[in-house]
Length: 352
Image (cartoon, rainbow, N blue to C red):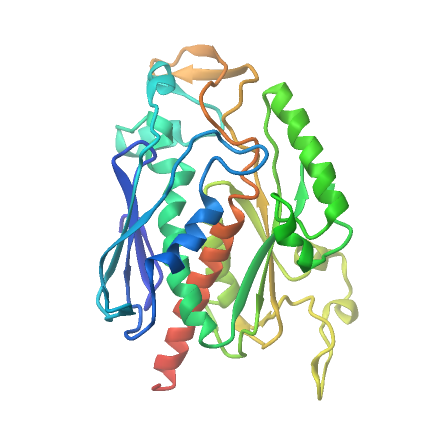
């Protein structure tokens, strides 16, 4: 097992490096006769590509997707779907002086320890550009889910210590941070400017909402729905924690406060986040991810080189100030992939 594949019936394998020739994904298990175009996939990729929005890397990539297989006459054929995106705006020069240095907060040291070799250019396989394949596969997963009336939305609820006070979904696409609170978004943008001037970076919290998910998705023990959702989200490089529903707040509740009452209309509150016993209960699925600050900063840090000597380091190059909001569509994609996989597993269980 190489750890480059994810899912059971709807299974994806991503490939490629940040400064390699291209990146992409192979999707196996997508049902046939699903209408799909390159534009369907491109719309999702455009939401995560670099060079857009305040605090974004100046790297300019078109991230135009090419469909190599698995689609004929605008419909999926049921065979493996291979998608490719070329790297075009690559500048590896700033990384040459780092090829023998293990940068703080990056996977440099651990990749070297595991493989005995690593691609130092732009972080190689550990780069956030790997998520291109996830987002492309997520576009297919969303198509499957749309047929069941399932919608997924990710939005920023905290950045640089600034939290939203309201959740107005109409505001999400009106600001570059995809924040549902206009005033909070303005304060977040100011915080990004402050961090950029200091040469530093910011972390935050992304909330993901899945609406319309039917009851019954998920497995009762090891493949609990929240377990697979957490694995999918935690597999994103910048994510350091996942909450479901009330999350860590449940540790401070009484049982009488935590339990979601159920009447003839359904659940009257949703601290469970739409999942009970590892299985979806028909309520909205609510998740939150803690996103760490981008580790590539120009603030002076102490690092170690490959000979074990301490070195002083200021990282140069083209980097985001925060993984938010470009990570938001990646979170959506991973949730979509998990839900599509469990939807197909449920269909198989029922013999559909």
